[in-house]
Figure 1 (tube, rainbow, N blue to C red):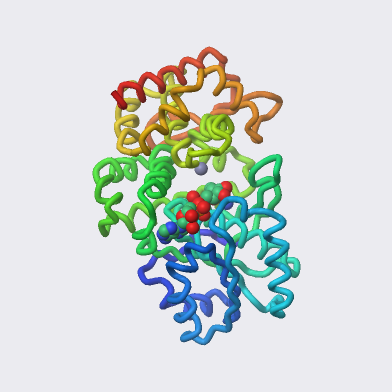
Figure 2: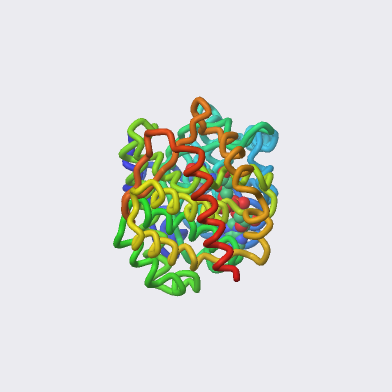
Length: 368
Ligand SMILES: NC(=O)c1ccc[n+]([C@@H]2O[C@H](COP(=O)([O-])OP(=O)(O)OC[C@H]3O[C@@H](n4cnc5c(N)ncnc54)[C@H](O)[C@@H]3O)[C@@H](O)[C@H]2O)c1
Ligand SMILES: [Zn+2]
């Protein structure tokens, strides 16, 4: 298997070097570009022009900018377009966009002609630091998200943080949630860096933005490389906060709650649970909550999507998470900032409920 980290390039402007990079990685100059309507409008002309100037033959595909584009029916339409355009195995697919385009593009590349190479050009903070790395590609099924897919490693992940400048602040804060997650699970010094420079990063100030993006991407790549198929429990630590988050997303029916927002709430719960079960010292809990407190939410989201639900309802909803095993909930906990583990034992319902209550009390105080 490839080493994911050797295929990640962080550079501004990255598109200017695309020809060289493709050549260095043994990729030909025939490229299907997949955009969503927003990324086509924002970056399409520049990217297409740059590729053509570098001698590429291109074919352009555009999907609506919404989660429902990650479906078999939209993949089917794109296959047809590709067949009609005589795209064969000598072509690559370049996915230009957020996680939706990245997952859909990866899915199509994994299946078209039994697999063509995919290159990721992520344009959201979440995609640069999470979804473009690790080779999980999927479409949604009406009965659940990301259920139909493959492991299809990208040949290259081209990260250019300058693309983030047009991203709405809600998407930035959402993405910051996963960035902060890497500090919690893998790297104390990264946590300290984020704590110190949070505001600069949010304002896209360099070199802080690029450092935050690049360290996150490499932490994810490193974890994936060590546990590609989730056998040792290491890759599972990427799900810190996610058991709670998936429960909240189900309760909200995915309406007006961004994934990153659910993960921030989930990490508050997971920190409280880590402390309650005696793994995490009080001082580290306080520090952890202080950094999470810097992540902002649109007005009313915490109240409507978290505080308005009973803790019991969230607990029940967590069982519906597809990662449940025998109705047992698995939790990723931290025993210090920078080190996470998959807790192997059952956690008492009362402890989970109490930690949700702790989190609610913390948010109420913060919002007061
Ligand atoms: N494969 C994985 O490992 C993995 C991991 C996490 C999430 N995901 C998936 O990622 C998806 C969410 O990704 P996302 O949060 O990037 O959402 P997204 O792809 O829907 O992008 C969010 C919005 O931002 C717009 N946008 C993209 N780049 C922009 C830019 N630079 N400036 C302005 N607007 C821009 C998009 O058009 C879209 O409207 C979900 O489907 C989720 O399942 C996959
Ligand atoms: Zn996530």
